[in-house]
Length: 103
Ligand code: SF4
Image (cartoon, rainbow, N blue to C red; front, side, top):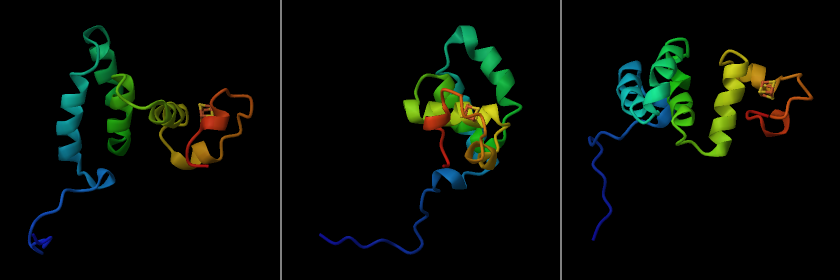
C-alpha cells in the first residue's frame, strides 16, 4: 500500500483560511445547534462579530466548545474581538485573567 498524494488533489482549508462564504455556511449550521429560545439573540449578535471570530463564538454560544475555547470567545468579545487587546488586558482582577488566551 502506498501513501502517495496527488499534487492536484485539493486540500481542505485550515480553519483560519476559510473564506467568508464558507464561514457563513458553517455558521448557519452551527446556529441551528443553539437552543431555539436563544437563537434569534445569538443570530443578532453574530452580525456584529468579525467573520474570523464567528465560528468560535457560535461553538461557545451553542455549548459545543471546550471551556478553553469558550473563555477565548468571552475574552475576545470583551475587547471587541481584538486579539492584541486580550494579550494586553489590564483588568488584573478579572476572574478570566489567568485563563485568557494569546498571552
Ligand atoms: S481577562 Fe481581560 S479580556 Fe478577558 S474577560 Fe477579563 S477583562 Fe476581558
